[in-house]
Length: 190
Image (cartoon, rainbow, N blue to C red):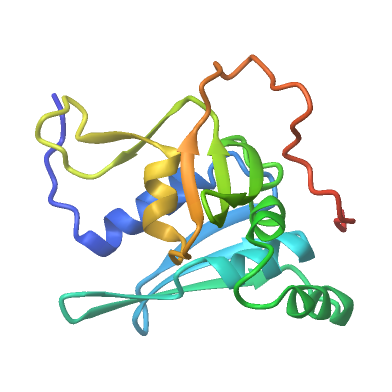
């Protein structure tokens, strides 16, 4: 029989983030309630850590209950990585930031930047066509699970930016696009 427990919205947010980063070998998601609710992403790659710290929502308010989200790199992020992201600026090069943030995450397919499309630039962050599940006390599911796509979770966990769109690939998980890559063209520390 399915267990029925009510999940608070901040706990569901943690479950969502943990499911999104579950198969990313460089990210571990932890949740702490002592001293305030806090989700910590331990990131073992400097470029990924810096990109995630610039893209993820870092504070949420659930009706007066605050939830903090922090990205914690394994070591201090080298100054050249920080200056690399500062040179990109706040409002441009989101394709490169998302490539660094999502590279090696199993839900990520590729990022495509299109310049001048219908009068504006667009960045499409494309996720693999696969279902992500996490517990959220869904009474319509025998196991209380929420079944969703990575694009839906991405819309919740990343700060929205004009011209950045999250979508799901049309190809099945084992098919590959020719000419596209999810690997960043910039050096990543391993």
